[in-house]
Length: 361
Image (cartoon, rainbow, N blue to C red; front, side, top):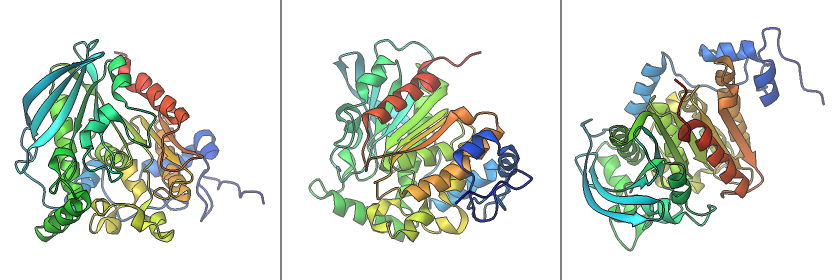
């Protein structure tokens, strides 16, 4: 059956989202409408979000529970290690005033003043003991570790242990119990585990932005799975994030409910009251028009493909309206919850284009 044509104003008929071709080729009016916050007639889901980007970010922060005081992060250097192509510094960061945060800082041998930076956010995968060490070891779902590639590109990279992972596991032999107990205790005390996790990543980003080697205008975020979710949340909340790359976790919350997929995500994932105010698309819209790469699997139960397309149709028009359609790629691959070689190549190319190369004056 032939798809209905666009309305005269460039928007899609009721009930139909814009295709990628329409967004990039002829949907300028729809793009402008979406950029102005108008979603009626564009076939794009939205929640009850009002005001400018600053107000929407403030509303997102409020949903993340009672967060620690926003004070300047600090670090203690524990031990430097020489590796091939880089120096690895083991750090202890003070990010939240409640619990010390072990971290890794990768400083490439070829790093120069005003080097690009990256906040590398580890996955979940039930690999509670691994945490930040993923930077060096990779995961069973990846095409190897990212550390050598980041060092080669001169990207100064920071990775921290999240709450309940790595050196921060409450029970060394029972990661699942540690995550569950932490979630429940925080909930009783007015805190949200995901909010506390995200606050630490935000503070880590702030610390990296102050590092004397790093160009604060060229810091990206990257992660897979849980790390991917945190990456796009952080990019939405922090406008200084220059580039967002996320792998295998662009999940549309409403679609996940419709497809009965809630059990696939860990308990950390769930933020009280979130869907009363925001959709996944609403959050991701706050990243535009900064460079954005999101790669996902069609067979991945954590990211129903219909939901990925829904988010894409919400976000791509914003880039088109800003004249930066080429700076957003939201793609689906024929795989499950894994990184394919082609996905790795795209991520590295994106880093080369948006981080490793100096921004023109």
